[in-house]
Image (cartoon, rainbow, N blue to C red; front, top):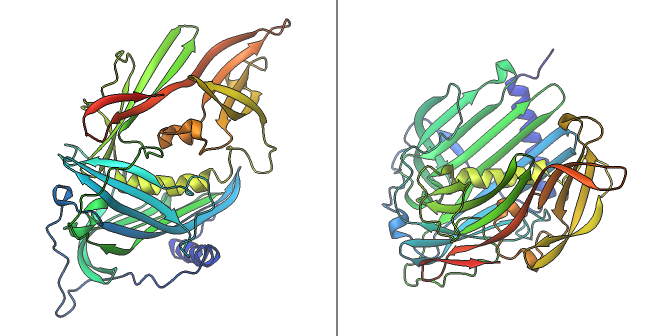
Amino acid sequence: MQRQSFRQGFIAVAGVALVLLMGCGASRPRGFSTVTEVPPGSTSVQVPTSWQDARVGDRVEYAFYADRVGSRRGTSASAGQLFVEVIAVRSPWVWLFIRVTRNDRQPHPHPFLSHGFVLPMRMGQAPANPPDPIESGSTSTTHQWAFAAGQHWIVQRIARDDSPGDGPTQHRLYATTPGPLYLTNGLLKVSFFSMGYSMSAGHSLALVSFQRGTGTVQGTPPVMGNPWGPGTWYETQERASWGDVRKQVCLGAEQGYLLRKVWEKPRDEVRCDDFQGAEVVALEDALINLVNDSVYIPTWPPRDYGAPLPRKVRVQLGQASVVAYLEEAPAHQNGGASWMRSRSYPTDLWSPVLQGLPMEVRFDRLSEGVYRQSEEGAREYRSDSRLIRWGTWLEESPELSTSAR
């Protein structure tokens, strides 16, 4: 099997990126380059900034692109600008607003990216064992100088090249002293490319600009109508032949990292105040995942290229109901041709009924079940899982309390 060389792959991705950026609105020069020696008379940005002294108006801006070629969902691409900005500070909380646009600053057309998100970040301690920027495998780390957003930075370059074994090529640049880039842990640039026998995928994220707020205002904590996730919780009910299980998921964020903890036997009251042992994701990785999700799920609801829309039904969510797409297909891997799998997805991702619903659930299925139907028409379920309720545990006070649907 012949593969493109790394050089050919890089040229191909660069060409795709240029086309994407031109096609998603007027783009401007990014001005990103790297050097190996300190330019005469230049200094790195060493502003002693951290979450503890966040200011309203602190902001970072990135240009991104992502593409995927050859999947069952067809060829898809996404490009634009990504902004993370501090809009309120109420110690120990920093309130962020995250928005995505096309390169011409117009609203992004993808439903995942068409609305902004609120994200409360707690000033505190970074996780004791934060995840590696590049997961597993053999990586190399070097230090050099880079020029980005009009500044010279001392950077740490983390790279991994698995292309000789049909794996991805990826690298990241982080400012050794994050300074004003504390919002994204000092991230300057991300590049990833993978090519297989019939499919390729790549993404890139590069710093365009940053700014420091004035520090003269505290701002007003926003309503959690469209939360990213931190500050919220949700519950699911799972029924199976071996018993019923209710799960509660608490979502939080601290010192640049997002936290997720699952309670398999949740208490009656909702108190998301213990995140010990939680799953941890760096904010910059969550942003990259959002960009990639808009490529891996190019149309809503998720379906193969050319497949018709599923039929519409109503799904009950607590005291309200929402119009949803119902997808039904044979579940051969679950016991033979007599078994079926059903999944439901909201038709309108931004329906008022879903107000306050965290992103990870909003962009996923509302229910899923595996069943078979008797001759009399009754359904025998092997398993069934559905969203039952959600709410906010972080209020403006900011005290821990409960606000639920």
